[in-house]
Picture 1: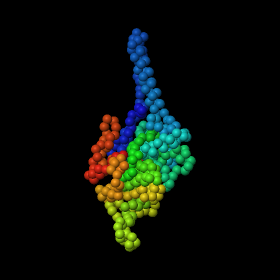
Picture 2: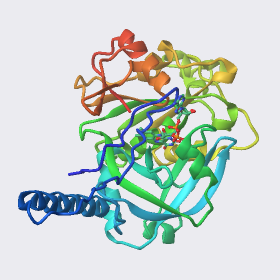
Picture 3: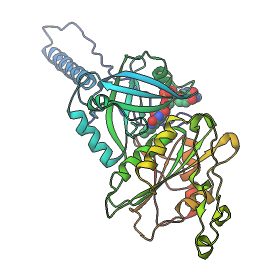
Picture 4: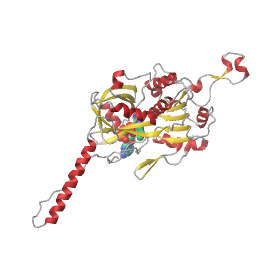
Length: 379
Ligand SMILES: Cc1cc2nc3c(=O)[nH]c(=O)nc-3n(C[C@H](O)[C@H](O)[C@H](O)COP(=O)(O)OP(=O)(O)OC[C@H]3O[C@@H](n4cnc5c(N)ncnc54)[C@H](O)[C@@H]3O)c2cc1C
């Protein structure tokens, strides 16, 4: 049970879900001089004082750092490195301050479950924000030592006006960062065979997680698939990304075996673009690594605001067109992750009620597509 005030997930403006600023420990107890003649008053003061002390001790215990990542208390990590990925985002690597073998089990359980996040504490303001650990893939894998030591990596965008992301981009390498979690954002059912992940900006981090969790379940009988549609504002955000829907598709039918010329291939569909740049961004390399590890099971398409290409209905339809024959909503999942406006446009806004975030009714582009056999989840 978590008795700390809930810090989770309300947007203040424009960006992805933003955790609500909350102060952690603020207890005070007033004292007054007891009068011998008024024993009842004296007793009540003792009672109030003891209760306040108990509550204070409890809250302090909740804020005490443990050695294993857990959802109740904060655990100290240190910032090992912060590598720029683009002009506005960086890859953070964090290592637990005190080694604990139990971290491995905590992470493993979360990876097997699906999409998860952890909360970072900003100690000066005593506020927290959620961030999404990246899976370890071949592209930028952690060293064996880092992995053994329970390091976690995060792709974090610097919001020039954002409290926590600015703080994280400014602290020194080597500094302490306190984390709390894991929090399961979306369990991927065991039956899931196919995911369409619609991501905006840093919403790609949960897409990588979903891919990792789903594809890890590959075996001789089972080859689950994920299609990622990733929208960004700038080329720099997804440098070097080549869209799979722009690659020549083998023509279906008798002509295909006959000519063998490039004309015998169909090319484009939808609005995706190739992001032709000299360098390839780290996240694009992560996506490529996932593709090479699971050939034929991953497709990625890129969309760029600066080139006026947006994810439209036809892109979603094309991505799921080859979809399979199964009917269960559990076997086909659409996940949407990104800034608040992006999620609202695609699937309708999430709701905040009775102190918690709710999915809210399905609206937007996905509702209009009326994809009855697909389950939809907003992250
Ligand atoms: C489950 C989950 C996972 C996430 N994973 C990631 C991730 O992997 N990577 C990542 O980069 N992000 C992720 N986020 C988003 C992240 O949690 C933060 O919301 C984000 O970093 C911004 O936080 P901040 O404190 O820097 O900005 P905030 O201080 O919260 O500000 C956000 C924006 O609101 C504006 N604003 C704030 N207050 C006001 C006000 N009073 N009036 C007008 N405007 C205001 C600010 O100018 C800013 O533009 C995730 C969010 C969730 C919910």
